[in-house]
Image (cartoon, rainbow, N blue to C red; front, top):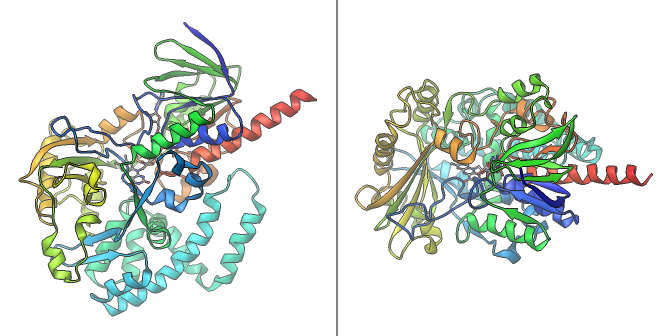
Length: 534
Ligand SMILES: Cc1cc2nc3c(=O)[nH]c(=O)nc-3n(C[C@H](O)[C@H](O)[C@H](O)COP(=O)(O)OP(=O)(O)OC[C@H]3O[C@@H](n4cnc5c(N)ncnc54)[C@H](O)[C@@H]3O)c2cc1C
């Protein structure tokens, strides 16, 4: 076993967006940081690269594409000064567009009045119901957003008073807010809207966040609030630019990033962290380790016997695509471009839908996708979100060509026949279904790349391919994320901190969990230093 002489204040396992943000915040506080990333580059789910061998100039986003979460928490890139390191957001307008099989479409504009006008084309009553619903979502945002930005393990009296003030101001809406937060996303749409296009658009949007039939899934309408309050963007030059900017900032602050450095053990002795061991046997010492990987993966890496077995069971059973539904990604390099003529002609207003993020899947289809996928069966009509990143940023494909991002979010994690025998066939089915809506997909393919849930699990060392590490539910929020007893600012092993999407405030590319872990570590190190000086 080789022992590295250098002592680090903090070692971070995993160089995803959260591991890197934790590193940057600690670097800003003057700490000596080492980030160890298993893959050959940083980013984790926030990455992009030239991943289709037949198309070496088509930039692929294998996971995250849209910048919504980081616009919600826009203080993160500002505090880290990422624009100085090449990070720039391109505005996406229109952002999300629902396509109905009959050729009609509904755009979620940033301006809620414009979205209401879209809905009015189908139903005057739905348009009014939408504006009323947005008042409720505003209240939800005024409650949820301040709490997302603080450490739930602290008392946060001021923030709680602010939230209470917001609730008191709109107290008439409180019963409706409770109904939204405890009921399902499907129920919330059905309660308010009458037209199939409006209802389907709501289902297709909220299905991106989780099961629309699950109790408590009303919180997925946060997406509607985020879209209308903050808008959507993309990273200029691709998502990797964000992760590279974070790495550059961390190195500027004196931190070290080692890629191709998979950690095999978080070393703990008698309840105290000592450092980490890599798969190749190298050891690095530190009294603090932040796990920027999935919480289950993290706790199972801690030296044997150091984490009580009941907590290992608890984190192993924390929901990660618990219903058996998870992502599929099909990225396609094309020799020409896509177009959306049937829908653009029906609108007749000149809006270029090729640039938007397209939502395909009626209410019935979204429901069928959740039901069959959770039984291990591939849905009949895959519910899809798709986009052409090269339509927004021409640098991402050769001139006149296209790279297309196709993401059916609700596929079986473990289909009864296994993915190995059906991967290509399901990708064909997805492209076939998308081709009913978008022209130019089938006949211009240069190459494609497919990843299903087990592929994400293996490549990113995560659980069930869950894009947010732990499912987004009210029972897994705040200090209960990833599980009661594991979401606070201490763990059974002194000096060990969780710092990924699997803790508060959850998933999405935003760096907030890393920021939270860094603030916990800074407090821990300050207390330790104080004790030492006494
Ligand atoms: C298909 C898909 C689409 C998505 N779309 C969007 C989107 O459009 N917008 C959005 O905001 N979010 C999106 N997300 C979600 C978002 O990408 C994630 O929630 C977020 O990036 C998680 O960041 P993280 O740093 O917490 O974890 P991760 O990105 O999972 O990073 C964890 C890192 O730890 C590393 N690691 C694991 N084990 C070890 C080990 N033993 N040693 C060393 N390193 C290790 C991994 O390699 C990885 O780099 C999407 C995700 C997926 C998969």
